[in-house]
Image (cartoon, rainbow, N blue to C red):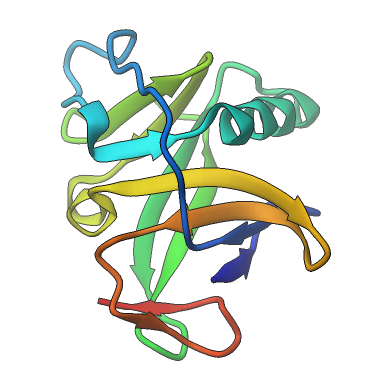
Length: 142
């Protein structure tokens, strides 16, 4: 499933495995542990986008929001503020990824990767919790 976000890059829903390090996460924020996986390739692109934006110390906020033709879509935003106490924080290859608790329920077990291919390039979410997606590839159902 593909969703467009963040200027010229795209996202898609599917994902793979990667080691996650929540050790560098804020002491007040819950750990994502192995429940969300960001691949090194995805972290590299996130780091490049943060640097291009001029905010290399910012984080990436991932989440699920209501909307789209099947009910939900992935949220992928720059996060300039410190994580909330209830946020889950994952650090992968120097990139902080922040997820709110409600979204984490729907993202648990998800892998975030970055793919390039004939159909373009973008972030790919492999989410074992989804039951389907729409034809446009930009929304999901649980």
